[in-house]
Picture (cartoon, rainbow, N blue to C red):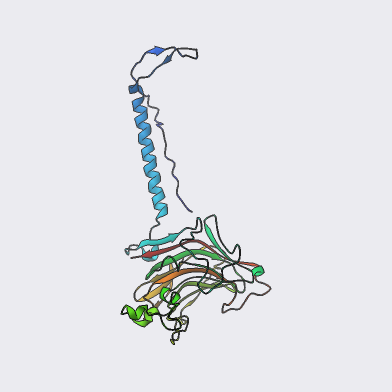
Length: 318
């Protein structure tokens, strides 16, 4: 899953006799029969063939590694001029990229966020009060438009709330002017709406609904700045035949200047038009909340540990 391998012969296997020029016999200093001593010309041909084979193997391996490290654009954006702007395979937790909480949250409990065998684990546990667990790129990077996709698996169970979403960076960093809108927009000649709490939910799930995909675009999700929220609630709900919690799936959203389209395993689900607040930088969030969802909080049937597992996350931009 993570890499590529190649079996390339490292030596000549044709059975061809190795040419040599005749040299002088000499006596083996350890005793025994005379041994032929080869001149430099005797070894030039096999050494050249070995060097050529090693060079070919290195070139092939390098190409295979590069191909594995830079995946091709997925189906929804293939051939449209997109290139990989960001990706994480979670071979380890990159602290310079990810912060283990949103700015308004407490730090996560012990062992709630970790990587293992190339998978990020976000774990909300009963014994720790089913805390909200998330990681974000708020302090490292934000994105405006693109194709956003993550390969994820999550736990079925009442109260589980896995998600992959984006939120306005200008809103999140608006500490000095709060509760007024971030002055960045006015200071840069932008519509104030481009400093609202715009939110794009690439995917949200509910543990009580393991066959449902939710994808939502919000105009102003906080409802603050004296501006009510609006969202595509009329088409953000998409039931599936399969139980999404049984396997990893690819959850994606294509955000352009005029609309957002959601995908599951590369298959188009629904689209909605963007708002006047949408076209602004947003940062990534991966989460598992253990309570607060719209289908209810955990009960006695809820597993003791609720997991969001993330194999990889990628951002493609034109």
